[in-house]
Amino acid sequence: MPRISLATRSSLVALTLAAFLGISDWLIAGQSAAPARSKADDQSTSQPKAQQDSTKTKSKAKGKAGRSSKARTRRDPPGFYMGREIAPVMSWEGVDWLFRQTRIEQEEPEAMLNALKIPRGATVADVGAGAGYHSIPLARRVGPKGTVLATDLQPEMLRMLQANARTAGVTNIKPIRCTQTDPRLPEGMVDLVLMVDVYHE
Image 1: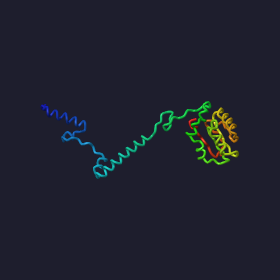
Image 2 (image 1 turned 30 degrees about the vertical axis):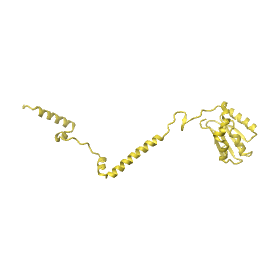
Image 3 (image 1 turned 90 degrees about the vertical axis):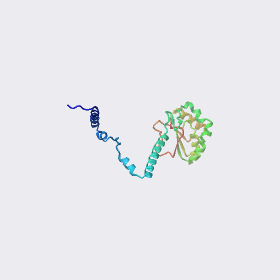
Image 4 (image 1 turned 90 degrees about the horizontal axis):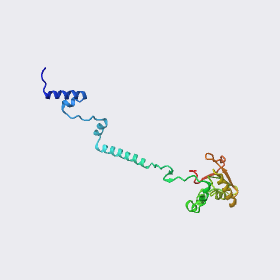
């Protein structure tokens, strides 16, 4: 058997490995393998430079728009909505807070009722009426031929509402004990529904 030189042996080993790895053409030609070209590469080289720049600008703008829309999505922690703390459910024992003096400056209740333009003789529902903070002014606005349907979950609130109505001399408020799922309002009989600070309840 003829003797094989070290250089020849090394070449044979390299060719065997190259054949095994599928790169024999690369080794034999002694060239560096060029990466495979995709259709996108072919299209980008065939496009004029101005068109390529325009495509890049559009893709960048699209990426930025996607990021900014995600950044605008607010993630409130539990107990908050739109950055404000959700008020706790209020027991009838905290009723004095409903009649605080600062409420007039903070909420301007008369301006609110003026904006509603409630006609005389209307039937208005005060949902979550509490002890009647809004029910009594509503009763005066609808007049003796109108009705205020004052609903609340807590019977204690409704009892205080009746006492406050008697003190105010209004007789056209009808207290209604509602539930969390049923306001117990007469169907098709209500002209306006007022809800103030009740969603969280």
